[in-house]
Length: 303
Image (cartoon, rainbow, N blue to C red; front, top):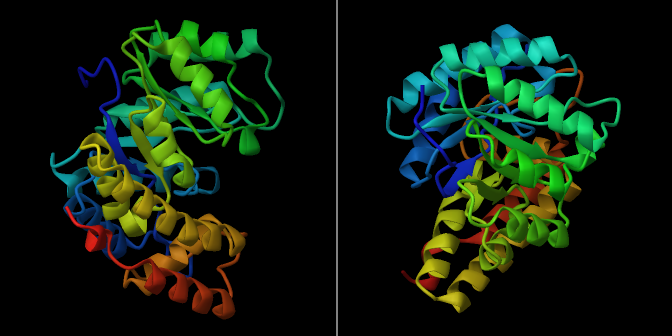
């Protein structure tokens, strides 16, 4: 069991789950991707989030991904795992499995489908944290869950010793600022899940990111944080603007599907999407390849 009282600051790729054309786990691609992001200098790895297609994978596949990445990481970086479902008992079972598979913490969104009120959110997370074998990171992603975790509820949940942070993928900067203000001084880490908001989030007190782009271009996120911490704001802004251009292209061409296509373009094959969804078109792949080429290197601005 991890001794974390807060999620360590830094960059965590929201790791894609490479699949074959028949929907099986592409183990070689997953191993290679794990090695690459670690070599890129990430703080940890977050498997089975939205980019990892957690909602579309069977429990056996989720277990296989957790075990494979944990074994491949081999202590070089910690591995977190998303645990998501609509049924509380299955979420509890997922937490038990994540703990048994060596996950350092669990990234948990509220149950999706029916909206939840603030008191329901508070009870849901408190009950989970009281019994979970590993610490929890709250996951605010209202576009997928229809629930924005209220600032007041998060402030109260942050006092729970087994709730160590929050990933915000809501894209509302005012919300992020209010959240950081409300939880300041607590052993509680807030990171952004919005690739385009990393630099701005750091400026108001966020501690890093769990994001899709770090699958393919983690040196950019790592360098943005390094330049920001050293006071090299022009360099950090340069990298953030260039990263935004690639992120915007990916959003127009399939979101998580686009990142999987980029990984294939980088040689991590096969890296197909889970059924019933379809991979991006060849036309989109051409656009993505041009955007990736235009990005250049994170070292272009100097150390």
